[in-house]
Image (cartoon, rainbow, N blue to C red; front, side, top):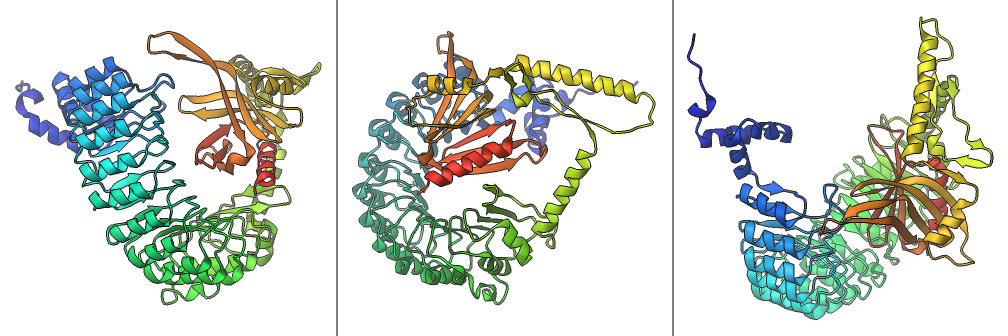
Length: 622
């Protein structure tokens, strides 16, 4: 008998750590720590990133176990309760327990105040990245404490912190000289004074986001462009409506290394200033200028032909752009065409199928093309012109005949839209030849939710022994599914109940009409919540079937009804998507003007609901 060898007696800690570093998947790392306590300790000391639940008691235990943690993510996620979330008491534990932390994410932690964030500034001197986006209670006092205590700060995201003013930028300029990335989106109290103070101390800024900073004007942006002429790579100016031509001329002349530029919604920019981008910003890769109403054919053609590194271009809502903007682009780059991967030209009424054919000829590596809400570009028109889309290119085409946006998919570069439509019709005819079993949807004046109308497809004929038994089993399983859905919350709704629910749950008035109501589920960070979606003449609303249960900080059970109300005027877009693994599962995404997304799924009649949403959003849009 050979001598038994214990691996723990032969391998040193550094050798086990080397083995741990070679593991590729999280599953293998979890298995590693389950071998014994020694291996668990080694795995804990080597862990660098953690996304735990909020709570002081658990955070204290984690700080004792993970002693070398660099990245802590406490943002709202599926693993955390919606209420109360992260509070100041949690941050006090973080500041004292995770002293070596370099990255801290507190996205949407709405319970955090200046008290907790000040503790972070005094306790985490090695912090390099801080994300407090949508922490709406934070002010200059708390964030200035972070700037004074964290001199190595390189990335700061305060998106949606509307109480922040120029005082914070002055503090950053004085203390954080290594700052490289700053997001000030929707900080409406930031002005040119703050940007001028920022450039005096922070000399390394590479990425600056001032989207929706409505008090920023030409003076502030010109100062930024001149100060960061060689370092600036990303500049976002979405909906900064006070900006004029002077800002864009300065950016074009000074920012030679700029790679991403967002000027969408800056309606005061002229065609001449937009054209100036073509001669100076040669490294530009992403350009978004949606609803820059003065974009012309000449300016767009110059940008596309001279900015040869462009990969993403968006100019939706530019009503003066015509097919002439795309002429001659296939000769760019010595005949190889453009390098564009994503092109969005939605809501451009003067662009026709001829212009799209020029785009396809010039952009041979196109991955996504959005021509939705272009009335002269339809699916039928593309079929008649015989357009051949690039392989694996996603195309969004708005078809006015059925008031919906289509997403054609291509299996090869020679497949046309007409061929794909014919394949779909053939598949439908094959399915219709099968015998179908369905549960009736109406019974004594009650309407059964269509989510319960499960279909079971069975072969029309078969000589296999025992097929009748399989048929009976399928029917019995079908009944079990229906019973399960009813017990899970798929209610039987009396006729007219939808109007009573919406009048009780939302503030409606006499002139507001209920256009459509359907059962569905809304996807939240805590999972899918079943309820009813309402589409009225003024808003889109959702009301959950059951009360959502959660727990307070003291452990008490809290119940509330989950409601969502979105005015039609605040909806930026309606998108549809399909689960790639299960194509039968379709989703609808509502995107607001603040770039928040609401996902809905589980519709009894997906096409009808999508048609209503598209029609109302198009009707209400300017």
